[in-house]
Image (cartoon, rainbow, N blue to C red):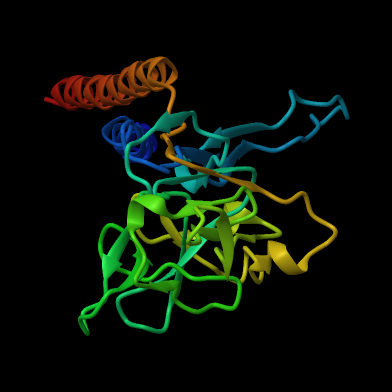
Length: 274
């Protein structure tokens, strides 16, 4: 009976993680560029209660008997399916159609974060003047194909246009869009599920994800497209997450009931000794 207590306790811990993961998905249903997560579980070791043996006459006894010792969380998977596009009035709003990621410099000035959140802004540089810099909403510089910040001098943000391959155009004196020689970088990964999440919609590379692949230099991958004036919404399916939440809550309650039942059985057995 004590074994049932520990097995049910591991089940409650696992389902608590499941509920937390689902709740986080629902909380970020409106977060731009957010990718849903899902908890995965695996059984703990099985204990063998009866081995395969034979009687004194050589007849086989029943097959061996095993009992599980509970469950644990194995991984929390990330699902990178495409989110729906939402129109935006922000001239620097960008959405990615494909498997690519934007890159931007983290606050430490050394780490590159990768994101699908294209809610960028053209901000004046802190040094003053009229130089605009493409940054995230938090002020981190977005990187071009050379890994450098993207800046334009004396430009008007609303007149800047960005093509599907990330090239930046600005109208000349005749109003004709002119290539400014700047291109927004897009990166892919051999195993994007191996990326480490560092925010609601930001990731960093790991040994599991592999090195980032710059789309501009790669010919053996399907390249992504940038859509200006749109943002990629969360890929969370509210109906699916609500069903999963109900299932997780019922599983948690079932394990809780198992603990209560075992406690009652132990209490009954203890009273018999008196």
